[in-house]
Length: 305
Image (tube, rainbow, N blue to C red; front, side):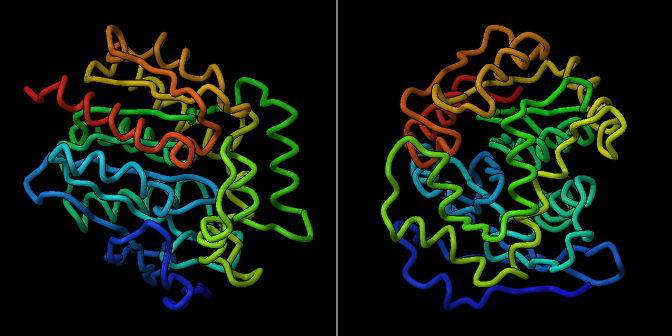
């Protein structure tokens, strides 16, 4: 497998991001290994909160959320998905699949870091991957927070807007990651923040994962990931541990998806679900501190038994 590893100098002087990266190795699926980057902050003995980003961002997205969590005594682990951030990036789009992403994150979090009692916070693909892990390894998780995400099976038609996004990501002559993120926020991002989202992707080969990711979302009932996602929903409809929705009010992609979780997941009953005002799809940029406080309060209000 051919890999691209973004030179470290591309990440020099990131605005508002003070945490040094750490790394673990996971199996690539073809006999080799991949380096997965993550940042960790907070007390080593604190309850673990795993922050999973989505497309086409990286752990930098959580920089406004992390201080609220560590200030509440929580241990934060925020990986970069394979193909993003400081993690290795296979250059062949065929190397990426939904199942591969689930396995890479599983191995990093459980086999390498041995995390237990996890509170998952998943946004965008962070929810698609994280909810599969919750369903397939429920004993590892104590709570779930979903923010602007879903778990599609392909049984319900996707919007034309999403299908257009799929086509754009794979066919557009230019794919400017920073601009994509900026277009998904309500607030105007400073130029240095847009540059930080571009930093992991200095050339076209490094963007293979970012370009193919939208095409991996199940949009038809016979999609390769549909059966596994249906099985995950079977587990979630019996999930009784605390489950919170924290969507934003201005996301045209996932708006209304919170109600599906609230209706179908037993653990969501009676929880203090919230809609964060003034947030776009990348709510971490628009209302990051508010999201962090919601998660911290949720952990404090639902002690493990």
